[in-house]
Image 1 (cartoon, rainbow, N blue to C red):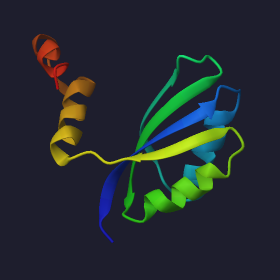
Image 2: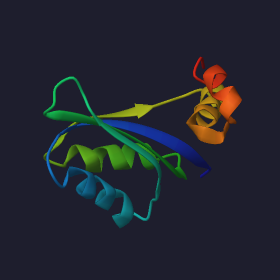
Image 3: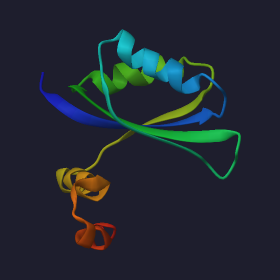
Image 4: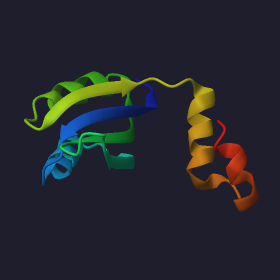
Length: 107
């Protein structure tokens, strides 16, 4: 199977230890989290976690099933991005020089 980059978005209860349990699901299966973003939603009791990982194509379904079993996970979504957006995401994420950042934000 080919190794691909996968992006997963989760809504979770904003409780201590939730991120640690999610990271444990990945590490126990030998996967590495490449990028991670966590922030509260409009509701301060709920946070959104967006993460990326490189793995085989069947990775997403296996991980989604395991994450859904965690008590504090509300929902799990596999984010499918076209290749052009994936490269743009990296550009906007900090690979651009200081003068080019405003242009990158329009992606």
